[in-house]
Length: 287
Image (cartoon, rainbow, N blue to C red; front, side):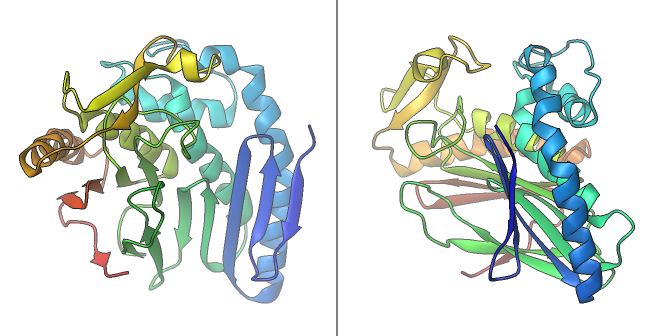
């Protein structure tokens, strides 16, 4: 399995290797951008083999031994604060890869702005005075630009990740134990945002509700790190009170994580309803 890199007509760099699919963009002097892209493309092929070497350990529930590789360690460290509930380092894999590619892209370069988007989990760089606008899509089954978050250099967040119930086989890339359409989290880096988005999305739930259809993760994907745990497969009708109760459950956890300094903010979406977390709340823009 070989890696692939290509410069797209719109100025983005596309990096792909097995399940890893990154879109990168940098702004700055043309020579700096070219050098940054070359650095990212050079570093990228080593990431997946290193993760595969430690895959068995990365699928182990935490707490577990700390892996050796840099990206694997970032995954482990991002998930470790949540070891009191079921979580494996795989909950942060997409974000940690985005962080690693961004670090390679920015190393020694003078860039105004840059981002690495790995399947919706995004690591970004902002020089002083710079900003990025990141679109929000609440439901993969009916993709539309539902809004945007303004990311400013003066903020502490440098990573953004989204988790929700759209699972493998139904348009998503992973699984959720909860029913959120989408939970988007801002954190210090993409790995930490990825881990937190996973646990917050799991908390947006109505346990035992007849409208929530669940299946064993292993029945959908035999290689899933979730094994026989029940994941959300489909969701029926909910009334407004049930939607609010599920969102409130997730927001309580998000608020606790924000108070603990683990996240900077979050946007929780379910059935056209939204809950915000963070102080200040994420700066939302209309689509």
